[in-house]
Image (cartoon, rainbow, N blue to C red):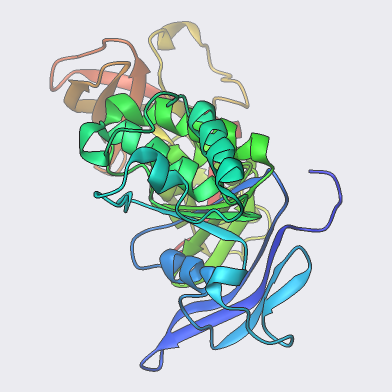
Length: 361
């Protein structure tokens, strides 16, 4: 994103309940037209952070700015209705007794003609032209979600806060609705902070991901970087299944059944964990032709016995009990691959796709 004043800026936000910290030292900034996802497990402080930015929850300390103007902190506190913040939640919260047009117009100000023009514009933007006279109960879940989006954007908020807004939709509709929502938000130049516990949703929608755990942001960056350079084992595991190979660092090297791994920066004798995702654990179908000098990238082959194989649609997952220590490693194979239980196969790992962490991190 080009250098410019953040539309939303949060500095060192903290909140505790009953003496127990729920949000600790959270800082982030979101530019106009940017989507940031607060990603993390339930109870990690995501929704509390959102409520504090909206003004419905009072922080214990910190600062919140919108377009560089303080709405909480040293400059005092601005009430929620004056913050130019839009809200979208899992339940669409449409007024059942109002029409679609009346729902969209609910927070609008100005004369009747101006309000009607903005309602018509927003309904067209979310592909619901002609639906203005309908009531919410006459709409599908996806249509209700688009009405909620139109209503939230109609007053032209500078910041849009979204708390699991798509989790109530079935999978068939979700991707399409997310794409429409993202397109409209970016066209409006709204800064978006989206709370989700689904990594796929964050990867699909976010320009930047802030990964939360235990009330803190533990990693922040573009989706590619957060996925491919996790800060620790838990961060890697949040985005996908992982395999863990354990060893001991000796002179910046760790011996494993897959060959020696470089583990620089680890104390001599320290326990380390080598993490690899199932899609990067490869079955060596031609082990006999490899010769005595395997490539540096692939290392040494290790044998395992098939424990289970299941077809998942686009891929097959195969669990192996490894000869070297009896541990279970899982490989992902594109398409259909369902070897019989007890089949012995040799496995290789992509060294350039492994992550090395101190044990316990």
